[in-house]
Picture 1: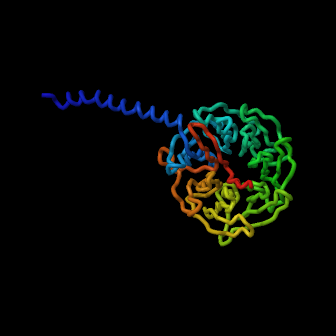
Picture 2: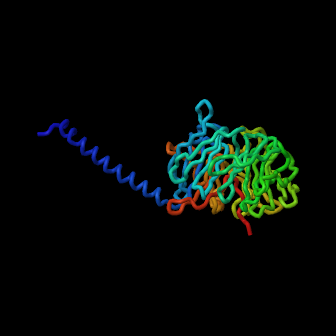
Length: 378
């Protein structure tokens, strides 16, 4: 008769073989899915709220937008402070032709291959980095110094600087137009939003003066309107891109404001829905999103409570989802919070640097933007 011990010894190799047999096919299936993947994915760079590790740790997190925004994977990134700790992510952008996603941190710029997840290169940038933007053809990046006097015009393939655009005090947020003809440059120590011509890489225009220093902003697809947030204002202002004049000053009604934990500005974040029917505005003091009609007189429509202070807002390309930096996924039509982004450890994820990338048969074919830019061009 077999003892319990002998039966246990016989079972161990069988169990091990079964476990190995289960693991091998699963790994093979995962590789096959990666090679032929099609769908919509949200790429979230962390730490994307200062260098706070409590909002998803360090890396590039990928979520499946078509299946409940489930966590897919964490891509290992670099971008470290000199002491070896993860540095603040300052921006994220995509080049479809180069099959690459880019992450800027306080000190460096990284290029990551979208298919393999491997880092192609990382470059330390003189003057540091801030929130960049890439041309629609995927070849050129405007990369601001870290609140410095310069924007670097960068070759997306090599990471080398083509030209420096000078004449600023605190270079910060950057936005390429959908046409690719202009780049909008936000100097956060200026009352003017500057416009550069991408053929000459020279500043050719400006909009303003606005009521205070300009913070996050967005534009419509036809490049006729700029919607800007400014220091100390719970609200936004509107500029005419064609004439360069400020048109409107809109304050959030029914809500008080005060000191906020980050950014020093209550409305740090604004975005147009892709159909340009609504403006969504961050309220960092009351931890809310305020929604306005994007048509004069900019009627205030409703408000949505968030779990944390929002410092940014963007949208899915189809306009179905809104993504505040506090981590919620919101149904734009119903205004309902559907879920909160969670990483592989079931921790809440929040970031001010996220972008949609769409794949067909394993290749990236479209990418959104981090700004909530309007997409009506006709």
